Length: 386
Picture 1 (tube, rainbow, N blue to C red):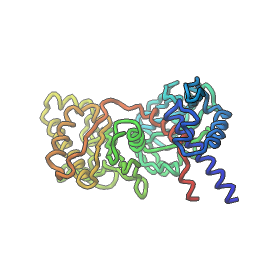
Picture 2 (picture 1 turned 60 degrees about the horizontal axis):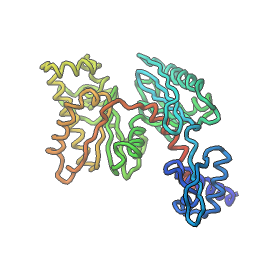
Picture 3 (picture 1 turned 90 degrees about the horizontal axis):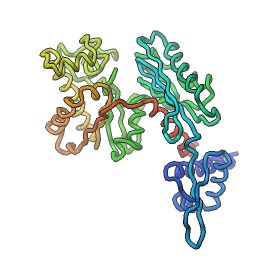
Picture 4 (picture 1 turned 120 degrees about the horizontal axis):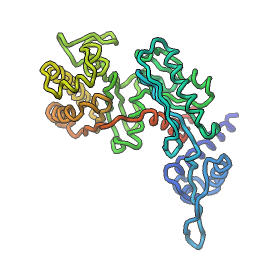
């Protein structure tokens, strides 16, 4: 039984290696696949035959070869493979249906003001998924549903550990949706997901060790160490919003039970709850040089700078990526100040850190669909430990 299991695992690993390479570098020939993977040409031929039988891969036109031969290149049938991505935010649920070319086939969105109980948010997710399934060209070619969630997430178990804005606590989201819809379900914290995708093919593709801050309704963060996401012992690494940055009368109570957390003033919910200001109102008043708003802005800017400088000195990242509506709205004022602060306040040995920022809103539902593709092409090396 052990030998059979090992053989099946090796077969699966070889297939995923070949499929992943065809997806990333196709059109590519069988000979090139053998050279790149280190597999024998017979093994590659067998793998490709299976992939073609499953209609995952097809042959393209011939290309000139040596000795008069005409090698036939292979490519993934990306336009006929589909993924659904769901962004579960505090104020809305948004879904996107894409093919593996990352082309949008359809979208759906449900807005909401208050999530009163856990099933209410889940109902919105169900509604969006059903609408997207209604326009799906071929249900047998849907390879999963990815969910980006604003909150603390145990991605391996598929559980939302805590998301106060969504009324979810230890909520088995994967189990509930997978049971209902029957497709593979992958969930991830919204900032961890952004960090993973940006590290693979986005702004952080040239980074090795990086920090990601998302300043939005709340403040989230992620840590990439050695090009791998660092989740922490209990899946909550990167909770930068609870960095203690405000003192004295500015140390306001936080929902985490502490006081003086960055999120109490530097997030949309903190501004609204503690200062009765929407982000748009705050932005307008700062640009109109309102004295009280400018004083608050200076406090927030100093708090963010303090958090960044301490984290850079402690973790020594090569890149920092800032994102979220606060950056989209006030980034032109805030980014230069943070760059100066980093240059002046961190140890000289850490000053080579690059500060980057996302200038426009990210389609996180589309990123969540990318989570499906990531898992679809993953080589199951972790299974070798079994």
